[in-house]
Image (cartoon, rainbow, N blue to C red; front, side, top):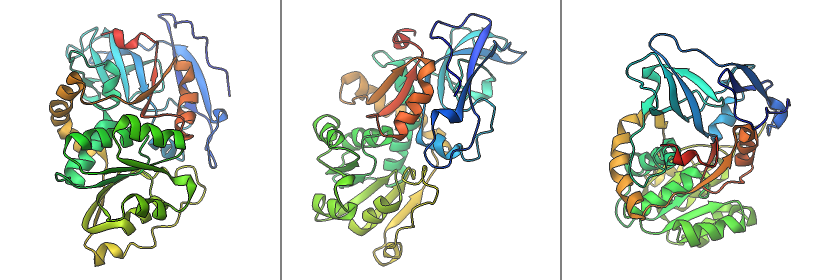
Length: 347
């Protein structure tokens, strides 16, 4: 892997992007990426140049490395940037916006590729990549649209210490969930979930069969599941679900780094016999729910009732390390890369 450029701020004439240079076989390494420096792009009529200040690294990026990402080209991902030069009246200089031209320090964007970010008193800018961004929207849609959570219902969440997992618990509690049960990958994460995030009980899935741990945590079953893992976790969720339960399938991180995907749950037919509904979804199909999420979540953030869970890594030169660390489970909450440790003060 080429060494990333110096952490000294880029000059006004240069920009840096991360390229994927090879397809991984199993877990990716730093050698699958390259930092590429080039001339600062110039916006054409109807576009604007943005300087990125926050980057999201997400589990789905690993899946895209297998073919969806083009080799030797900048990668993509959710990013917050500030307009520094504009030739589009809809994108005034100084505006902060969300776009998908991530993994680079600068990008040229069109108005139809971005969402201008609202400013809320007491809400940090980075929240728009976490609880107010695709992460929080995934959790909110899973609970309200797919699982259709009702007051008092018990919820099981897999990968509970990740971005979607922590957001699901925070939002679920505010939406009236009953018992919140989570799986995580270490004893430290289990303790964090119950002591700080709001889970009633959590377990380390490395300690034994997941179905046994879930049965012990929920001997009377669960009503709703938000699954981010698939495989054995999904099989356990089906096994312990009550009749007429609902399972919102968000992701399958359990298979992203495996040359061979894990076997499908062996108990899928139980969905029929016990009238359980399993439904997958893509958050991009629910952008119309974004304002509803703002209306629900922002007042709770401002009041302190809705906590923000994020692991923030400083420096664009650390974005590959942050991504690999996220895949190894080194984060609690959303993994975010910040341009500087002052990024949230740049509004």
